[in-house]
Image 1 (cartoon, rainbow, N blue to C red):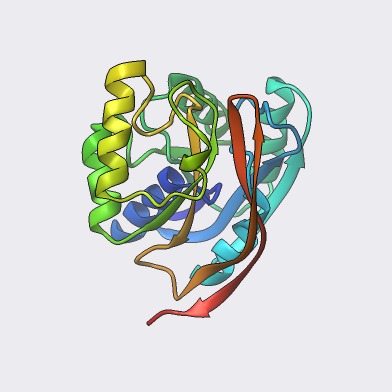
Image 2: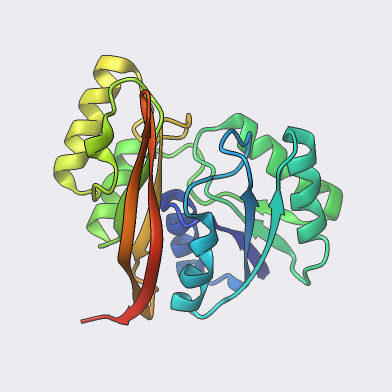
Length: 224
């Protein structure tokens, strides 16, 4: 089946894409909607413009658009982008967010496309262990929930980070996957990358009790 994969550069969409490729889907396009506001209802915010490098590292065409309005306008922008693609289905990284899944299902239904969510309803800790075990190189690029501090920004997700996330979930009820908007990630390498993304220059922006790890410059480099 010819499909498009929704990608933000984050870990969940990257793992969903991995699953889709392993399952034999022909991924013709990567699709990114870039919000111009931090408080997007639907889409990942920090470093989304780097999906250009993400797509180049894999060798799949990227189509993208920008959105800066409310939640219904975001959905219309996604629908308009998908309506121009010659595919039969759409891959998404939804895990437990009914809001995200229902809205993607709605757009796909209106366009006559199959909505495919390879990670849907899977256990969060198992998914995190899969990401770590497969060798995904993932860094945290945004934190927004009580319990996080600026030391999390730029931190790699590894076994020690997962232990700390589990503890934060126990103490403050944050989502281990960050699916409630508690934190956001960016993937620098994955099993299907032909080249990895190297961060050349970045800065931390911290405001009150939330912040971003802004990648100002990045490049592709050969994998060892």
